[in-house]
Each structure stands twice: as C-alpha cells, then as structure tokens.
Length: 275
Image (tube, rainbow, N blue to C red):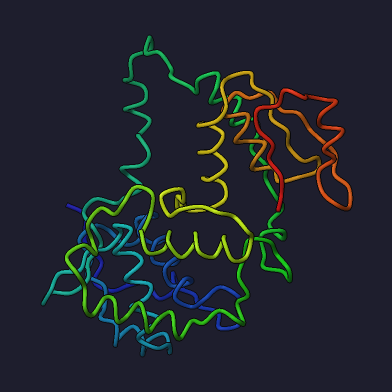
C-alpha cells in the first residue's frame, strides 16, 4: 500500500503577493496540481487553516477560500471533527477515461455528432479576443457599476431571505413574476406609449432568449427576416436557428433603411431592429 505523506510539501506551494492572481487562487492551483501529480494522495490530511496561514504568512480567509473551492470541486473532503482530506475519488479521474478503457471500447460503436441544424447553429458562433471581454465605458446591456445601488440591493435581498415565504423556492409563473410584469406594462405605457396588459408581458433572462423565443414562435422555415447590417450578431444566430432566410438590410443615421428592406424582401415575416 502506498505510503501517505504526513505533511504538505511547502516547495510545491509558491505564493506571489505581487501577482495579479489572487492568493487563494494561487494556493488552489498549487494544491490541485499536487493532487493531480500524486504528491498529495487520496486520504492525505491537510494541515488546519490556522497552521497553513502561519506557514504561508497569509490570512485564514485565503486558506479557507482555496479549501472551499477545492471541496466544492471534489478534490478535498471536509470531515467534521477530523479535518480536511484529499478525496478518494479525484474529479479528473471521472472526467477523462483511461487509455485502457478507450482501447476496450467497441470499434463499431457509431459516433453521434451534431444534427445538420446543430452544425448550422455552431457555425454562426462568434468569438471575441480576450481584451474585448473586459468592462469598458458605454458597454451596451450593462449597468453602471458606480451607480448601481449595491447597498440597497443587498438590504432588500437580505430582508427577503430573512423572512421567506412558502413560495420563495417554488415554481413561479411561466411568464414571470406578476407584480414585475404589471410594473413593466405601466412603464411601457408611460415611457414608450405602448398599450399593453401584464398578460402580454413575458419576463426572460436576457435579450438573446427573447430574440430566440420570438423567432421560434413567429417564423417558419424559409420565412424572410430582416436584420440590421451591421447589427446585433445574436439576432442573426437566432434567425438561423429558426431556419429563417436572413435578409441583411443596411442602416443609416436614423436606423434600418426600410425602403431598402422593402425592395430586398417585401414579404418579410419579421424585422429585427435595435431600439
């Protein structure tokens, strides 16, 4: 039986206080690598958070943050009254099949890939360079970080959780929270001049779900759909997923060029524009 080490190898853990990577994340990476490389074997008991905090000259929060992440991902197990141990089953062993099991797999097993529709959707995916994912001024669809009422938000959320109702964890209405839909309908009437009832309002998780749901409900395969060119790429993907015929329509300073759209596809079933 393999010998279980009695102390964590300090040389395997290197923390750099000047690094942009948070200390807890550095510790998480070091312990995870030591587990995967076999330096820390299953059943090994890690030192307590106080001891490790003194050893690495960091706060206990740094240690517990790394431990909590490793426990959540299945690399460590916390046993009340006993301590924290390396898990008996490492998650990476469950995610990747061994070469032996691969060699024993039936050679005539058919491979299931994406459907033709799935391949079409996958081909429309758009990737952006990492630097374009960073927050920047005037980014669309994002609230102002400086102006968001985090304090009030936390207060309201805390009050709601301290005094929960029976329906808090129950299924809600499919169309969304009724009082919210009532407020949205009232706002649209006052701000946009839209006359609608709460029953006509559906709350979704975001613009992409809204466009996708609208396309699937209103479009049949082959129907023409105007999309702004240039415009929101997500709407184009939703139209393709609905098997619509995409009709790119140019835009000017006032928005989509309606007359051009009429010439290109006067029978269009749907028009997707940016408000």
